[in-house]
Image (cartoon, rainbow, N blue to C red; front, side, top):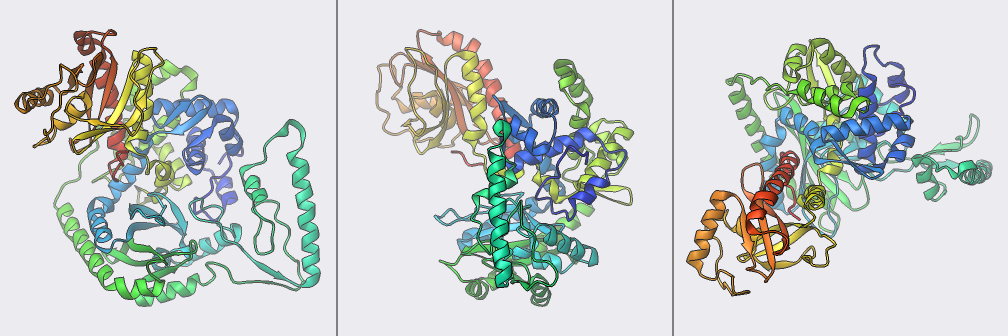
Length: 633
Protein backbone atom coordinates (compact mmCIF):
# COMPACT_ATOMS: atom_id res chain seq x y z
CA UNK A 1 0.00 0.00 0.00
CA UNK A 2 1.09 3.60 -0.32
CA UNK A 3 2.94 4.77 2.75
CA UNK A 4 0.16 7.14 3.81
CA UNK A 5 -2.50 4.43 3.97
CA UNK A 6 -2.50 2.38 7.15
CA UNK A 7 -3.11 -1.35 6.69
CA UNK A 8 -6.67 -2.36 7.51
CA UNK A 9 -7.24 -4.48 10.59
CA UNK A 10 -9.10 -7.76 10.56
CA UNK A 11 -7.86 -8.85 7.16
CA UNK A 12 -6.46 -12.15 8.30
CA UNK A 13 -3.10 -11.23 6.78
CA UNK A 14 -0.02 -12.18 8.67
CA UNK A 15 2.27 -9.33 7.75
CA UNK A 16 0.94 -5.89 7.02
CA UNK A 17 4.44 -4.53 6.57
CA UNK A 18 5.27 -7.21 4.02
CA UNK A 19 2.11 -6.48 2.06
CA UNK A 20 2.86 -2.79 2.16
CA UNK A 21 6.34 -3.30 0.70
CA UNK A 22 5.13 -5.49 -2.13
CA UNK A 23 2.63 -3.22 -3.88
CA UNK A 24 2.74 -4.08 -7.60
CA UNK A 25 3.94 -1.31 -9.87
CA UNK A 26 0.69 -1.48 -11.87
CA UNK A 27 -1.59 -1.25 -8.82
CA UNK A 28 -4.25 1.48 -8.86
CA UNK A 29 -3.49 3.73 -5.90
CA UNK A 30 -6.93 5.43 -5.76
CA UNK A 31 -8.55 1.99 -5.59
CA UNK A 32 -6.28 0.99 -2.68
CA UNK A 33 -7.14 4.20 -0.86
CA UNK A 34 -10.86 3.92 -1.56
CA UNK A 35 -10.97 0.37 -0.19
CA UNK A 36 -9.06 1.55 2.89
CA UNK A 37 -11.82 4.11 3.52
CA UNK A 38 -14.53 1.46 3.10
CA UNK A 39 -12.73 -0.83 5.54
CA UNK A 40 -12.42 1.92 8.13
CA UNK A 41 -16.12 2.69 7.79
CA UNK A 42 -16.89 -1.02 8.19
CA UNK A 43 -14.75 -1.29 11.32
CA UNK A 44 -16.51 1.83 12.68
CA UNK A 45 -19.86 -0.01 12.33
CA UNK A 46 -20.85 1.91 9.23
CA UNK A 47 -20.45 5.56 10.20
CA UNK A 48 -17.48 7.86 10.76
CA UNK A 49 -16.76 11.54 10.60
CA UNK A 50 -14.67 12.67 7.67
CA UNK A 51 -12.00 13.90 10.07
CA UNK A 52 -12.07 10.46 11.73
CA UNK A 53 -11.44 8.85 8.36
CA UNK A 54 -8.58 11.26 7.79
CA UNK A 55 -6.96 10.17 11.06
CA UNK A 56 -7.61 6.43 10.74
CA UNK A 57 -6.45 6.11 7.12
CA UNK A 58 -3.58 8.58 7.23
CA UNK A 59 -4.89 10.17 4.03
CA UNK A 60 -5.05 13.89 3.41
CA UNK A 61 -8.44 15.45 4.08
CA UNK A 62 -8.79 16.50 0.44
CA UNK A 63 -8.23 12.88 -0.61
CA UNK A 64 -10.83 11.63 1.88
CA UNK A 65 -13.30 14.19 0.54
CA UNK A 66 -12.75 13.08 -3.05
CA UNK A 67 -13.04 9.39 -2.16
CA UNK A 68 -16.26 9.83 -0.19
CA UNK A 69 -17.71 12.04 -2.94
CA UNK A 70 -17.01 9.29 -5.47
CA UNK A 71 -18.45 6.59 -3.20
CA UNK A 72 -21.53 8.74 -2.59
CA UNK A 73 -22.00 9.20 -6.33
CA UNK A 74 -21.81 5.41 -6.67
CA UNK A 75 -24.44 5.07 -3.94
CA UNK A 76 -22.06 3.22 -1.61
CA UNK A 77 -21.98 5.90 1.11
CA UNK A 78 -24.26 8.71 2.15
CA UNK A 79 -22.81 12.05 3.25
CA UNK A 80 -24.71 13.30 6.29
CA UNK A 81 -23.24 16.62 7.34
CA UNK A 82 -19.69 15.89 8.42
CA UNK A 83 -20.25 12.13 8.57
CA UNK A 84 -19.91 9.41 5.96
CA UNK A 85 -22.45 6.59 6.35
CA UNK A 86 -22.36 3.26 4.55
CA UNK A 87 -25.37 2.83 2.24
CA UNK A 88 -27.22 -0.42 1.40
CA UNK A 89 -26.13 -0.22 -2.25
CA UNK A 90 -22.60 -1.14 -1.13
CA UNK A 91 -23.88 -4.65 -0.39
CA UNK A 92 -23.84 -5.35 -4.14
CA UNK A 93 -20.12 -6.05 -3.77
CA UNK A 94 -20.72 -8.77 -1.16
CA UNK A 95 -23.72 -9.99 -3.14
CA UNK A 96 -21.43 -10.56 -6.13
CA UNK A 97 -19.28 -12.88 -4.01
CA UNK A 98 -22.25 -14.71 -2.45
CA UNK A 99 -23.90 -15.17 -5.85
CA UNK A 100 -20.69 -16.53 -7.37
CA UNK A 101 -20.26 -18.83 -4.36
CA UNK A 102 -23.75 -20.38 -4.86
CA UNK A 103 -23.81 -21.75 -1.31
CA UNK A 104 -26.28 -19.27 0.20
CA UNK A 105 -28.77 -19.85 -2.62
CA UNK A 106 -28.49 -23.62 -2.25
CA UNK A 107 -28.06 -24.07 1.51
CA UNK A 108 -29.71 -21.13 3.32
CA UNK A 109 -33.12 -22.86 3.37
CA UNK A 110 -31.56 -25.97 4.94
CA UNK A 111 -29.89 -23.87 7.64
CA UNK A 112 -33.11 -21.97 8.36
CA UNK A 113 -35.11 -25.20 8.64
CA UNK A 114 -32.53 -26.68 11.02
CA UNK A 115 -32.67 -23.57 13.20
CA UNK A 116 -36.46 -23.73 13.33
CA UNK A 117 -36.43 -27.44 14.20
CA UNK A 118 -33.78 -27.20 16.92
CA UNK A 119 -34.79 -23.74 18.15
CA UNK A 120 -31.11 -22.81 18.13
CA UNK A 121 -29.05 -20.42 16.03
CA UNK A 122 -27.45 -21.94 12.93
CA UNK A 123 -24.71 -20.41 10.81
CA UNK A 124 -22.81 -21.17 7.62
CA UNK A 125 -19.16 -20.12 7.33
CA UNK A 126 -16.34 -20.33 4.81
CA UNK A 127 -12.61 -20.23 5.38
CA UNK A 128 -10.83 -16.93 4.85
CA UNK A 129 -7.09 -17.54 5.08
CA UNK A 130 -6.42 -18.08 8.82
CA UNK A 131 -9.93 -17.02 9.84
CA UNK A 132 -13.52 -17.99 9.20
CA UNK A 133 -16.18 -15.71 7.71
CA UNK A 134 -19.95 -16.08 8.02
CA UNK A 135 -22.07 -16.31 4.88
CA UNK A 136 -25.43 -16.99 6.56
CA UNK A 137 -27.00 -16.54 9.98
CA UNK A 138 -30.29 -18.05 11.16
CA UNK A 139 -30.47 -16.45 14.59
CA UNK A 140 -32.91 -17.17 17.40
CA UNK A 141 -34.04 -13.97 19.10
CA UNK A 142 -33.58 -14.32 22.84
CA UNK A 143 -32.29 -12.25 25.74
CA UNK A 144 -28.99 -14.08 25.15
CA UNK A 145 -28.71 -14.37 21.37
CA UNK A 146 -25.96 -14.52 18.78
CA UNK A 147 -24.80 -11.13 17.52
CA UNK A 148 -22.52 -12.21 14.69
CA UNK A 149 -23.40 -10.89 11.24
CA UNK A 150 -22.93 -12.05 7.66
CA UNK A 151 -19.41 -11.05 6.69
CA UNK A 152 -17.96 -11.03 10.22
CA UNK A 153 -14.42 -12.44 10.36
CA UNK A 154 -13.31 -14.57 13.33
CA UNK A 155 -9.89 -16.07 14.16
CA UNK A 156 -9.94 -19.75 13.26
CA UNK A 157 -8.53 -20.93 16.59
CA UNK A 158 -11.41 -19.45 18.60
CA UNK A 159 -14.23 -21.13 16.68
CA UNK A 160 -15.67 -24.57 16.03
CA UNK A 161 -15.40 -24.26 12.21
CA UNK A 162 -11.73 -23.24 12.43
CA UNK A 163 -10.22 -26.67 13.20
CA UNK A 164 -12.29 -28.22 10.40
CA UNK A 165 -10.98 -25.76 7.81
CA UNK A 166 -7.46 -26.21 9.22
CA UNK A 167 -7.58 -29.94 8.40
CA UNK A 168 -7.00 -28.84 4.78
CA UNK A 169 -4.18 -26.40 5.56
CA UNK A 170 -0.66 -26.91 4.31
CA UNK A 171 2.64 -25.62 5.67
CA UNK A 172 2.07 -22.17 4.15
CA UNK A 173 -1.30 -21.71 5.89
CA UNK A 174 0.05 -22.87 9.25
CA UNK A 175 3.01 -20.50 8.92
CA UNK A 176 0.64 -17.61 8.17
CA UNK A 177 -1.47 -18.52 11.20
CA UNK A 178 1.56 -18.62 13.54
CA UNK A 179 2.84 -15.32 12.19
CA UNK A 180 -0.54 -13.64 12.71
CA UNK A 181 -0.78 -14.99 16.27
CA UNK A 182 2.64 -13.56 17.06
CA UNK A 183 1.88 -10.20 15.45
CA UNK A 184 -1.60 -9.84 16.97
CA UNK A 185 -1.56 -11.68 20.33
CA UNK A 186 -4.87 -10.16 21.46
CA UNK A 187 -6.89 -10.62 18.24
CA UNK A 188 -7.25 -6.86 17.86
CA UNK A 189 -7.46 -7.40 14.11
CA UNK A 190 -10.82 -9.13 14.54
CA UNK A 191 -13.30 -6.44 15.67
CA UNK A 192 -16.20 -8.92 15.75
CA UNK A 193 -14.79 -10.87 18.72
CA UNK A 194 -13.77 -9.84 22.25
CA UNK A 195 -10.03 -9.41 22.60
CA UNK A 196 -8.20 -12.28 24.23
CA UNK A 197 -5.47 -11.78 26.81
CA UNK A 198 -1.91 -13.03 26.61
CA UNK A 199 -1.07 -13.54 30.32
CA UNK A 200 2.56 -13.72 31.37
CA UNK A 201 3.86 -15.04 34.66
CA UNK A 202 6.90 -13.21 36.00
CA UNK A 203 9.36 -13.65 38.81
CA UNK A 204 9.13 -11.14 41.69
CA UNK A 205 11.89 -8.84 40.35
CA UNK A 206 10.26 -8.82 36.95
CA UNK A 207 6.90 -7.92 38.52
CA UNK A 208 8.44 -4.83 40.14
CA UNK A 209 10.09 -3.83 36.87
CA UNK A 210 6.77 -4.36 35.10
CA UNK A 211 4.97 -2.05 37.56
CA UNK A 212 7.60 0.65 36.95
CA UNK A 213 7.19 0.36 33.17
CA UNK A 214 3.39 0.47 33.38
CA UNK A 215 3.58 3.58 35.59
CA UNK A 216 5.91 5.29 33.13
CA UNK A 217 3.64 4.44 30.23
CA UNK A 218 0.62 5.82 32.08
CA UNK A 219 2.48 9.09 32.66
CA UNK A 220 3.53 9.30 29.00
CA UNK A 221 -0.03 8.73 27.82
CA UNK A 222 -1.36 11.41 30.17
CA UNK A 223 1.21 13.90 28.91
CA UNK A 224 0.37 13.13 25.29
CA UNK A 225 -3.37 13.40 25.86
CA UNK A 226 -2.85 16.92 27.27
CA UNK A 227 -0.39 17.90 24.57
CA UNK A 228 -0.58 20.75 22.08
CA UNK A 229 -3.73 21.22 19.97
CA UNK A 230 -5.52 18.69 22.21
CA UNK A 231 -5.40 16.08 19.48
CA UNK A 232 -7.13 12.78 20.11
CA UNK A 233 -5.08 9.67 20.54
CA UNK A 234 -5.41 6.99 17.91
CA UNK A 235 -8.25 4.51 18.13
CA UNK A 236 -5.93 1.75 19.28
CA UNK A 237 -4.57 3.89 22.11
CA UNK A 238 -8.05 4.98 23.16
CA UNK A 239 -8.97 1.32 23.52
CA UNK A 240 -5.80 0.69 25.49
CA UNK A 241 -6.36 3.52 27.96
CA UNK A 242 -9.90 2.29 28.54
CA UNK A 243 -8.66 -1.12 29.70
CA UNK A 244 -7.50 -1.87 33.22
CA UNK A 245 -3.74 -2.24 33.25
CA UNK A 246 -3.64 -5.46 35.23
CA UNK A 247 -1.28 -8.39 34.93
CA UNK A 248 -2.87 -10.86 32.55
CA UNK A 249 -4.05 -8.19 30.06
CA UNK A 250 -1.63 -7.05 27.37
CA UNK A 251 -1.69 -3.59 25.90
CA UNK A 252 -2.65 -2.97 22.27
CA UNK A 253 -0.35 0.05 22.16
CA UNK A 254 2.59 1.16 24.35
CA UNK A 255 2.97 -2.47 25.36
CA UNK A 256 5.91 -2.80 27.77
CA UNK A 257 8.75 -4.98 26.63
CA UNK A 258 8.54 -8.56 27.78
CA UNK A 259 11.30 -9.81 30.05
CA UNK A 260 14.51 -10.35 28.16
CA UNK A 261 16.83 -13.30 27.98
CA UNK A 262 17.91 -14.68 31.32
CA UNK A 263 14.82 -13.44 33.16
CA UNK A 264 12.42 -15.82 34.82
CA UNK A 265 9.34 -15.37 32.62
CA UNK A 266 6.86 -18.01 31.55
CA UNK A 267 3.91 -17.42 29.27
CA UNK A 268 0.76 -19.08 30.54
CA UNK A 269 -1.61 -20.97 28.21
CA UNK A 270 -4.09 -18.76 26.35
CA UNK A 271 -6.97 -19.18 23.91
CA UNK A 272 -5.89 -20.94 20.76
CA UNK A 273 -2.73 -22.56 22.06
CA UNK A 274 -4.37 -25.98 21.60
CA UNK A 275 -5.53 -25.24 18.05
CA UNK A 276 -3.25 -27.77 16.37
CA UNK A 277 -4.44 -30.47 18.77
CA UNK A 278 -8.09 -29.50 18.16
CA UNK A 279 -7.44 -29.70 14.41
CA UNK A 280 -6.06 -33.23 14.73
CA UNK A 281 -9.11 -34.23 16.78
CA UNK A 282 -11.46 -32.64 14.22
CA UNK A 283 -9.74 -34.52 11.40
CA UNK A 284 -10.35 -37.81 13.19
CA UNK A 285 -13.88 -37.09 14.47
CA UNK A 286 -15.31 -35.18 11.50
CA UNK A 287 -16.83 -32.49 13.76
CA UNK A 288 -15.60 -29.84 16.19
CA UNK A 289 -16.76 -28.00 19.31
CA UNK A 290 -16.41 -24.42 20.51
CA UNK A 291 -16.60 -24.52 24.30
CA UNK A 292 -16.75 -20.82 25.20
CA UNK A 293 -13.70 -19.86 23.11
CA UNK A 294 -15.28 -16.65 21.80
CA UNK A 295 -16.74 -15.55 25.11
CA UNK A 296 -18.13 -17.16 28.27
CA UNK A 297 -21.46 -18.88 27.72
CA UNK A 298 -21.23 -19.38 23.96
CA UNK A 299 -20.97 -22.99 22.73
CA UNK A 300 -21.13 -24.37 19.20
CA UNK A 301 -21.04 -27.69 17.33
CA UNK A 302 -19.81 -27.72 13.74
CA UNK A 303 -19.58 -30.12 10.80
CA UNK A 304 -18.11 -29.61 7.32
CA UNK A 305 -20.22 -29.63 4.17
CA UNK A 306 -18.16 -31.13 1.38
CA UNK A 307 -18.34 -30.74 -2.38
CA UNK A 308 -16.15 -32.78 -4.70
CA UNK A 309 -14.19 -34.03 -1.68
CA UNK A 310 -13.27 -30.55 -0.35
CA UNK A 311 -14.86 -28.51 2.43
CA UNK A 312 -17.24 -26.05 0.77
CA UNK A 313 -18.48 -24.53 4.03
CA UNK A 314 -19.08 -25.43 7.68
CA UNK A 315 -22.50 -25.50 9.34
CA UNK A 316 -22.67 -24.71 13.06
CA UNK A 317 -25.36 -25.00 15.70
CA UNK A 318 -24.79 -22.30 18.30
CA UNK A 319 -26.26 -22.18 21.80
CA UNK A 320 -25.71 -20.82 25.31
CA UNK A 321 -24.59 -22.72 28.37
CA UNK A 322 -27.90 -21.89 30.02
CA UNK A 323 -29.46 -24.24 27.43
CA UNK A 324 -26.66 -26.71 26.59
CA UNK A 325 -23.16 -27.51 27.70
CA UNK A 326 -20.73 -28.20 24.88
CA UNK A 327 -20.83 -31.94 25.63
CA UNK A 328 -24.62 -31.89 25.78
CA UNK A 329 -24.76 -30.03 22.48
CA UNK A 330 -22.62 -32.76 20.91
CA UNK A 331 -24.50 -35.69 22.43
CA UNK A 332 -27.96 -34.28 21.76
CA UNK A 333 -27.66 -32.59 18.37
CA UNK A 334 -24.82 -34.33 16.50
CA UNK A 335 -27.09 -37.00 14.91
CA UNK A 336 -29.48 -34.34 13.59
CA UNK A 337 -26.61 -32.20 12.38
CA UNK A 338 -25.22 -35.17 10.44
CA UNK A 339 -28.60 -35.57 8.70
CA UNK A 340 -28.69 -31.86 7.80
CA UNK A 341 -25.14 -31.99 6.39
CA UNK A 342 -26.02 -35.05 4.30
CA UNK A 343 -29.02 -33.19 2.85
CA UNK A 344 -26.85 -30.15 2.08
CA UNK A 345 -24.26 -32.28 0.32
CA UNK A 346 -26.99 -33.91 -1.79
CA UNK A 347 -28.20 -30.43 -2.73
CA UNK A 348 -24.71 -29.47 -3.87
CA UNK A 349 -24.29 -32.66 -5.93
CA UNK A 350 -27.61 -32.15 -7.68
CA UNK A 351 -26.84 -28.50 -8.34
CA UNK A 352 -23.42 -29.35 -9.75
CA UNK A 353 -25.00 -31.88 -12.12
CA UNK A 354 -27.58 -29.31 -13.29
CA UNK A 355 -24.98 -26.57 -13.68
CA UNK A 356 -22.72 -28.77 -15.79
CA UNK A 357 -25.54 -29.10 -18.33
CA UNK A 358 -26.26 -25.34 -18.38
CA UNK A 359 -24.10 -22.98 -20.45
CA UNK A 360 -22.56 -20.09 -18.52
CA UNK A 361 -24.37 -16.78 -19.00
CA UNK A 362 -22.44 -13.69 -19.94
CA UNK A 363 -22.84 -10.63 -17.75
CA UNK A 364 -24.82 -7.77 -19.24
CA UNK A 365 -22.71 -4.67 -19.96
CA UNK A 366 -22.70 -2.43 -16.90
CA UNK A 367 -23.04 0.91 -18.69
CA UNK A 368 -20.02 2.08 -16.71
CA UNK A 369 -18.61 4.31 -19.43
CA UNK A 370 -21.77 6.40 -19.69
CA UNK A 371 -22.15 6.64 -15.93
CA UNK A 372 -18.54 7.61 -15.24
CA UNK A 373 -18.65 10.21 -18.01
CA UNK A 374 -21.75 11.84 -16.53
CA UNK A 375 -20.29 11.65 -13.02
CA UNK A 376 -17.02 13.24 -14.13
CA UNK A 377 -18.93 16.04 -15.83
CA UNK A 378 -21.04 16.70 -12.73
CA UNK A 379 -18.37 16.39 -10.00
CA UNK A 380 -15.25 17.40 -11.93
CA UNK A 381 -11.99 16.56 -10.19
CA UNK A 382 -13.91 15.46 -7.07
CA UNK A 383 -14.85 12.27 -8.93
CA UNK A 384 -12.15 9.56 -8.94
CA UNK A 385 -12.82 7.54 -12.06
CA UNK A 386 -10.25 4.82 -11.38
CA UNK A 387 -11.84 4.08 -7.98
CA UNK A 388 -15.31 3.71 -9.48
CA UNK A 389 -13.97 1.47 -12.25
CA UNK A 390 -12.04 -0.73 -9.84
CA UNK A 391 -15.06 -1.39 -7.61
CA UNK A 392 -17.20 -2.16 -10.66
CA UNK A 393 -14.82 -5.00 -11.53
CA UNK A 394 -16.05 -6.84 -8.39
CA UNK A 395 -19.64 -6.72 -9.67
CA UNK A 396 -18.63 -8.45 -12.91
CA UNK A 397 -18.71 -11.72 -10.94
CA UNK A 398 -21.95 -13.35 -9.88
CA UNK A 399 -24.22 -16.36 -10.29
CA UNK A 400 -22.89 -18.54 -13.11
CA UNK A 401 -19.81 -16.28 -13.29
CA UNK A 402 -17.68 -17.53 -10.40
CA UNK A 403 -14.56 -17.70 -12.59
CA UNK A 404 -13.76 -15.06 -15.19
CA UNK A 405 -10.75 -14.40 -17.36
CA UNK A 406 -9.51 -10.92 -18.19
CA UNK A 407 -11.48 -10.67 -21.42
CA UNK A 408 -14.72 -11.62 -19.69
CA UNK A 409 -14.17 -9.04 -16.94
CA UNK A 410 -13.48 -6.35 -19.53
CA UNK A 411 -16.61 -7.25 -21.48
CA UNK A 412 -18.83 -7.32 -18.38
CA UNK A 413 -17.65 -3.91 -17.17
CA UNK A 414 -17.10 -2.19 -20.51
CA UNK A 415 -13.53 -1.39 -19.48
CA UNK A 416 -10.49 -1.60 -21.68
CA UNK A 417 -8.48 -4.78 -21.08
CA UNK A 418 -5.54 -2.78 -19.74
CA UNK A 419 -7.78 -0.94 -17.26
CA UNK A 420 -9.47 -4.14 -16.12
CA UNK A 421 -6.09 -5.83 -15.74
CA UNK A 422 -4.74 -3.10 -13.46
CA UNK A 423 -7.88 -3.25 -11.32
CA UNK A 424 -7.59 -7.04 -11.01
CA UNK A 425 -3.90 -6.77 -10.11
CA UNK A 426 -4.82 -4.31 -7.36
CA UNK A 427 -7.69 -6.44 -6.02
CA UNK A 428 -5.45 -9.51 -6.04
CA UNK A 429 -2.79 -7.64 -4.10
CA UNK A 430 -5.38 -6.60 -1.50
CA UNK A 431 -6.74 -10.15 -1.24
CA UNK A 432 -10.16 -9.61 -2.83
CA UNK A 433 -9.53 -11.84 -5.86
CA UNK A 434 -7.33 -14.84 -6.52
CA UNK A 435 -5.82 -15.78 -9.85
CA UNK A 436 -5.03 -19.26 -11.15
CA UNK A 437 -4.25 -20.18 -14.76
CA UNK A 438 -5.38 -16.69 -15.88
CA UNK A 439 -8.78 -17.14 -14.27
CA UNK A 440 -9.93 -14.88 -11.45
CA UNK A 441 -12.24 -15.60 -8.51
CA UNK A 442 -13.57 -13.39 -5.71
CA UNK A 443 -12.50 -14.23 -2.16
CA UNK A 444 -14.58 -14.08 1.06
CA UNK A 445 -12.74 -10.90 2.00
CA UNK A 446 -15.11 -8.99 -0.30
CA UNK A 447 -17.73 -9.42 2.46
CA UNK A 448 -15.53 -7.24 4.66
CA UNK A 449 -16.46 -4.21 2.54
CA UNK A 450 -19.45 -2.97 4.51
CA UNK A 451 -21.48 -6.18 4.63
CA UNK A 452 -21.38 -6.82 8.42
CA UNK A 453 -22.88 -3.51 9.60
CA UNK A 454 -25.28 -3.32 6.65
CA UNK A 455 -26.52 -6.92 7.01
CA UNK A 456 -28.62 -5.93 10.04
CA UNK A 457 -30.20 -2.88 8.36
CA UNK A 458 -34.00 -2.79 8.63
CA UNK A 459 -36.48 -1.54 6.05
CA UNK A 460 -37.16 1.50 8.22
CA UNK A 461 -33.43 2.33 8.25
CA UNK A 462 -33.15 1.81 4.49
CA UNK A 463 -36.11 4.14 3.87
CA UNK A 464 -35.20 6.88 6.36
CA UNK A 465 -32.89 9.05 4.18
CA UNK A 466 -35.26 8.72 1.21
CA UNK A 467 -38.24 9.82 3.33
CA UNK A 468 -36.28 12.84 4.54
CA UNK A 469 -35.37 13.89 1.01
CA UNK A 470 -38.98 13.58 -0.17
CA UNK A 471 -40.33 15.58 2.76
CA UNK A 472 -37.78 18.32 2.12
CA UNK A 473 -38.76 18.52 -1.54
CA UNK A 474 -42.53 18.57 -0.96
CA UNK A 475 -42.61 20.31 2.45
CA UNK A 476 -45.15 17.75 3.66
CA UNK A 477 -45.14 14.89 6.14
CA UNK A 478 -43.94 11.52 4.80
CA UNK A 479 -44.41 8.14 6.48
CA UNK A 480 -43.52 4.46 6.12
CA UNK A 481 -45.89 1.82 7.51
CA UNK A 482 -46.37 -1.96 7.56
CA UNK A 483 -49.57 -4.00 7.78
CA UNK A 484 -50.26 -5.91 10.99
CA UNK A 485 -53.56 -7.76 10.68
CA UNK A 486 -56.23 -5.18 9.90
CA UNK A 487 -54.12 -2.26 11.15
CA UNK A 488 -51.17 -0.26 9.89
CA UNK A 489 -48.17 0.46 12.09
CA UNK A 490 -45.95 3.47 11.42
CA UNK A 491 -42.28 2.47 11.26
CA UNK A 492 -40.78 5.59 9.69
CA UNK A 493 -41.81 9.22 9.85
CA UNK A 494 -40.60 12.67 8.76
CA UNK A 495 -42.83 15.54 9.84
CA UNK A 496 -42.97 19.14 8.77
CA UNK A 497 -42.98 22.11 11.13
CA UNK A 498 -46.16 23.73 9.83
CA UNK A 499 -48.77 25.18 12.18
CA UNK A 500 -51.27 22.78 10.58
CA UNK A 501 -49.49 19.47 10.09
CA UNK A 502 -50.10 15.76 10.63
CA UNK A 503 -48.78 14.62 14.03
CA UNK A 504 -48.22 10.84 14.19
CA UNK A 505 -45.37 9.06 15.98
CA UNK A 506 -43.46 5.92 15.06
CA UNK A 507 -45.24 2.89 16.47
CA UNK A 508 -48.72 4.41 16.12
CA UNK A 509 -51.38 1.98 14.89
CA UNK A 510 -54.45 2.93 12.88
CA UNK A 511 -57.17 0.91 11.13
CA UNK A 512 -56.05 0.04 7.61
CA UNK A 513 -59.29 0.46 5.67
CA UNK A 514 -59.68 4.29 5.89
CA UNK A 515 -56.00 5.09 5.17
CA UNK A 516 -54.07 5.34 1.91
CA UNK A 517 -51.20 3.38 3.47
CA UNK A 518 -53.54 0.59 4.48
CA UNK A 519 -55.35 0.37 1.17
CA UNK A 520 -52.24 -0.13 -0.98
CA UNK A 521 -51.21 -2.98 1.33
CA UNK A 522 -54.70 -4.50 1.62
CA UNK A 523 -54.97 -4.46 -2.16
CA UNK A 524 -52.09 -6.93 -2.37
CA UNK A 525 -53.86 -9.54 -0.23
CA UNK A 526 -56.04 -12.25 -1.83
CA UNK A 527 -58.57 -11.94 1.03
CA UNK A 528 -58.19 -8.56 2.78
CA UNK A 529 -59.77 -8.35 6.26
CA UNK A 530 -62.73 -5.99 5.85
CA UNK A 531 -64.63 -6.36 9.12
CA UNK A 532 -65.85 -3.64 11.49
CA UNK A 533 -65.79 -0.81 8.95
CA UNK A 534 -66.74 2.04 11.26
CA UNK A 535 -67.60 5.56 9.99
CA UNK A 536 -64.75 7.71 11.31
CA UNK A 537 -65.87 10.74 9.25
CA UNK A 538 -68.89 11.41 7.02
CA UNK A 539 -66.74 10.39 4.02
CA UNK A 540 -65.44 7.04 5.36
CA UNK A 541 -66.29 4.09 3.11
CA UNK A 542 -67.99 1.47 5.29
CA UNK A 543 -69.67 -0.76 2.69
CA UNK A 544 -67.51 -3.90 2.12
CA UNK A 545 -68.51 -4.29 -1.52
CA UNK A 546 -67.70 -0.68 -2.30
CA UNK A 547 -64.37 -0.92 -0.45
CA UNK A 548 -63.43 -4.04 -2.42
CA UNK A 549 -64.09 -2.16 -5.65
CA UNK A 550 -61.81 0.63 -4.38
CA UNK A 551 -59.07 -1.91 -3.57
CA UNK A 552 -59.39 -3.40 -7.07
CA UNK A 553 -58.81 0.05 -8.54
CA UNK A 554 -55.85 0.65 -6.17
CA UNK A 555 -54.32 -2.65 -7.26
CA UNK A 556 -54.68 -1.69 -10.91
CA UNK A 557 -53.44 1.90 -10.59
CA UNK A 558 -50.67 1.21 -8.10
CA UNK A 559 -51.55 3.96 -5.64
CA UNK A 560 -54.27 5.04 -3.21
CA UNK A 561 -55.68 8.49 -2.55
CA UNK A 562 -57.78 8.92 0.60
CA UNK A 563 -59.60 12.18 1.10
CA UNK A 564 -60.87 12.98 4.62
CA UNK A 565 -61.91 9.40 5.44
CA UNK A 566 -59.67 9.01 8.48
CA UNK A 567 -60.02 12.56 9.75
CA UNK A 568 -61.74 15.66 8.42
CA UNK A 569 -59.21 17.90 6.66
CA UNK A 570 -56.62 15.13 6.13
CA UNK A 571 -55.67 14.10 2.59
CA UNK A 572 -53.12 11.39 1.81
CA UNK A 573 -51.64 9.57 -1.19
CA UNK A 574 -49.67 6.30 -0.83
CA UNK A 575 -47.64 3.86 -2.93
CA UNK A 576 -46.70 0.25 -2.02
CA UNK A 577 -43.11 -0.90 -1.36
CA UNK A 578 -42.36 -4.30 -2.90
CA UNK A 579 -39.62 -6.83 -2.14
CA UNK A 580 -37.60 -8.61 -4.87
CA UNK A 581 -40.34 -11.16 -5.49
CA UNK A 582 -43.00 -8.49 -5.99
CA UNK A 583 -44.84 -8.95 -2.68
CA UNK A 584 -45.92 -5.74 -0.93
CA UNK A 585 -44.07 -5.44 2.40
CA UNK A 586 -44.77 -1.81 3.31
CA UNK A 587 -46.11 1.49 1.97
CA UNK A 588 -45.05 5.14 1.87
CA UNK A 589 -47.43 8.09 1.92
CA UNK A 590 -47.45 11.86 1.77
CA UNK A 591 -50.06 13.41 4.06
CA UNK A 592 -51.23 17.03 4.23
CA UNK A 593 -54.09 19.27 5.18
CA UNK A 594 -56.74 19.34 2.46
CA UNK A 595 -56.19 23.09 2.01
CA UNK A 596 -52.61 22.48 0.80
CA UNK A 597 -53.43 20.70 -2.45
CA UNK A 598 -56.50 19.44 -4.26
CA UNK A 599 -56.87 15.72 -4.94
CA UNK A 600 -56.01 16.38 -8.58
CA UNK A 601 -52.84 18.24 -7.58
CA UNK A 602 -51.83 15.33 -5.35
CA UNK A 603 -51.99 12.99 -8.32
CA UNK A 604 -50.26 15.39 -10.73
CA UNK A 605 -47.56 16.83 -8.42
CA UNK A 606 -47.03 14.53 -5.44
CA UNK A 607 -47.56 11.07 -6.92
CA UNK A 608 -44.61 11.19 -9.41
CA UNK A 609 -42.23 12.29 -6.64
CA UNK A 610 -43.61 9.64 -4.31
CA UNK A 611 -43.22 6.88 -6.89
CA UNK A 612 -39.64 7.93 -7.65
CA UNK A 613 -38.79 7.84 -3.93
CA UNK A 614 -40.35 4.41 -3.46
CA UNK A 615 -38.40 3.21 -6.50
CA UNK A 616 -35.14 4.23 -4.81
CA UNK A 617 -36.19 2.55 -1.57
CA UNK A 618 -36.98 -0.64 -3.48
CA UNK A 619 -33.63 -0.59 -5.25
CA UNK A 620 -31.83 -0.46 -1.90
CA UNK A 621 -34.18 -3.04 -0.40
CA UNK A 622 -33.59 -5.47 -3.27
CA UNK A 623 -29.81 -5.19 -2.88
CA UNK A 624 -29.98 -5.53 0.91
CA UNK A 625 -32.45 -8.42 0.79
CA UNK A 626 -30.83 -10.58 -1.86
CA UNK A 627 -29.19 -12.95 0.62
CA UNK A 628 -30.90 -12.14 3.90
CA UNK A 629 -34.26 -11.27 5.36
CA UNK A 630 -34.67 -7.54 5.88
CA UNK A 631 -36.57 -6.76 9.07
CA UNK A 632 -39.64 -4.64 8.34
CA UNK A 633 -39.32 -2.54 11.51
